[in-house]
Image (cartoon, rainbow, N blue to C red):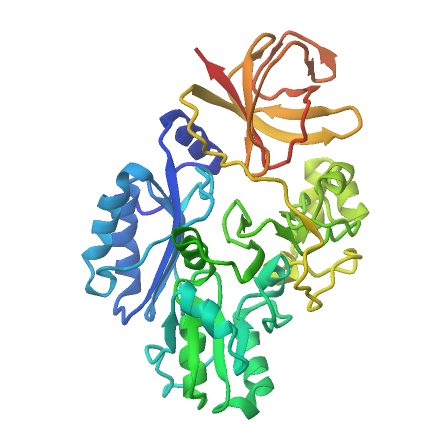
Length: 452
């Protein structure tokens, strides 16, 4: 009986592309009393693995928190696996604004002490005694009330690229840090103000609203389904967006655009930018904002030190990070002295620039394709892209597709290429290939060969 992943992310990506089935990225949560989280976890894995469901899921005695990717054709069968449990009957599934077939490449279900770490040890605190849920239209209306205080219960790297106008955005790295900060800041407004809160999908506000009611706040409200559901209702009802910028998400996309406004800067050069990336140095893996020019010049690194490290032999890279602690002490979330234009906590409500029109990377082009590999580098001045071939063969004359969350789907016919430093007509798995690309590529891009 399979209870864990047996395929690597790379193998899974190839299988997804060969299957050619469109996938949905969605999230959901539920607070409930789960007596045996380990059994609950194993039962879910068995059911979801059969459906080719992937994602990152946390279960605990207090409930479930899930971000997932499933084949679109399996949606109703997947929903039925939830309806088996009384506490998930009729549960809302938040569909992503921008779907990506590669948003998740593994099915990971972990048992934790809590589905949202809150740092609270108060047995009298009832997590089910929550604030009033507001839909998008109601949320917009209450924001216009002068007696409303709106609070962002996400972290600094999330609110930096997008937030509701005039919101309090705590400069914190974890949800648990924000609770005492906001509680102290609003102590004098327990009865005279509307305390209105929001987060990505609603799960953090579900707990936060219960916490602030427990603390004596009388008028507590929360955005139902979070920013994800808000964006969906904006489109369905033609409402004005009070949210500005991009919504950070915890999957391979790292963000989905709500409005075309860019309100943040590249942390390295200061250019308007809201694209998050992780430092290429595996011993750093710092999450930060990086524009295309800096990404190319710094090879996806956050500093000259990390740039130097990634060019070392792999054995030396492993030696440098051996023995280091994991977690936020190594995998830091956007704060470093190397980031000269990181202004944590100093957020603006005005746009610095407007984003290019986004292209759905899953646009339905009915072609058969096979994954070849991934982008490694883009030389801006020469307009040359470098790719690593991981699967199949690439030949002169092949029609290729370069695809990514920002790049979209771009086709071209290969008429010349450099293979491992020399001009050649064929490239095989393991080769590094460079050729002219008349558009900018990103390190998240994949390269495919069009068949037939």
